[in-house]
Image 1 (tube, rainbow, N blue to C red):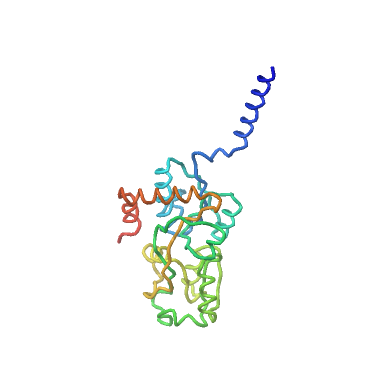
Image 2: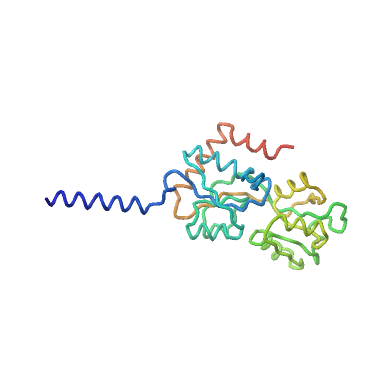
Length: 245
């Protein structure tokens, strides 16, 4: 009788643990992104798309997992990871020492950097040295903010929530320039025009996929899958699709 009772209690305990475990733990990755950075991630015809999106989907497939996407503002990506609401954050995030203090990063998957955008035809700003005293718009929570505060303290920052808002402020003349990531800048110029990218970049940066510090096994799996995609040609095909002229 005792053996039977113990067995029943053990089964009930196992069922309780299974109920408490999140359904996504085994077969899905919870990934947060701010889908306002074409060509990295954006929404087209109601569907999430872009270089980051396609790469993450390919990585997940290589790992035998599905992806559960959540769209939030960029400034909430790292806090969302720290609070364990997501497994990963992928949104053209630069790998920085400051971010490494609270999250881990997989191997860099693409090189970018900060660039300056001005209105096409504007000759008052020909390089970074001309930003002093100008109204420069940046997206809140991005490296653009801290970089300009440190290296260009005379700049008058105009912080906005979304990348598109930056471009619009420059286009209508309410800001003299915008500072953003290179892929988003060139995508805007290619698809909408009206602005130009100055030839001299502010920085050269490495993009990384942010992962929680308590899941080192996920970081290792991401790195292995990225190596697999590079070896079998999938990575090169995705890069060519999104960044070829």
